[in-house]
Length: 319
Image 1 (cartoon, one colour):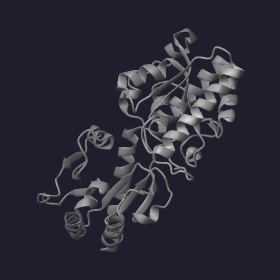
Image 2 (tube, one colour):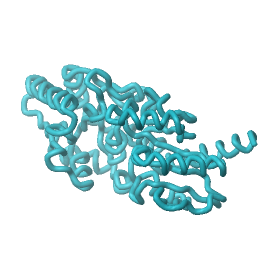
Image 3 (tube, one colour):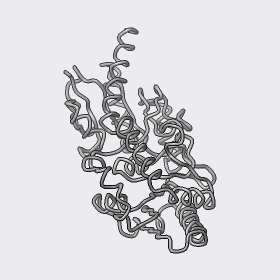
Image 4 (cartoon, one colour):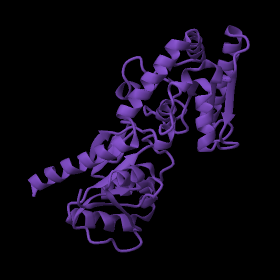
């Protein structure tokens, strides 16, 4: 495909990597320097939360993009309320209105950013599925863990860290009462981050992997969106279960991604899943197929190119 995309994201950004794997010319720019000629530019994939800190450069960028009918694309992979954003920067967003295509992993409160809104969930990175051996993972003897969780617990926003820690403690207590001798592994990544290889090993040696809480949740309001682990665990061949999120039904087929609300709900679900090993692995393989067919960064890159093509056609009709 002729043409190119400009971005301020780093080369290791997963969507940038996927676009390049698809053969798209992605050119990194610095807003403190002049932009290259925009003829042939499909779109600008922006890092809005960094760019808003230099609002004069963002304002100039938006003027240049508008003159050449190049859309500014923002993928918001965080919760949408951004309580840490300065009030002045919120005002700048409303004034400049930089976003033309807003990709959101959560469709809450999208009005702050504007633009065409598209549900655009997280995805699985290639490293998580390139060596997945589903047949080998049918061997129950390779699993030293019945249940595992890895993520930030001790550190992070206080309300979220405390909620997550309290949930996991209550769950472990409940499970030990129901299933004596259950093997439950909890690794606090805020104390020692896991390498990618360590994550993959833990996923593939745990019968059930948990998704509990998100650091972007508010004290009394959870994000609707699904974190990357919900896609990465199945891609690696593991089974994942998650706390209830609005966008589960928008991302997975019915009954494909089991949900829970309370520690007691979670314990009941775990007890049921562990009672039938064959059915557990059937579900894990169903999750794997769902992710590979719908939720890789390669697929996100293709969808972005489709949206940019549609936008060009729409703008062309208005000119």
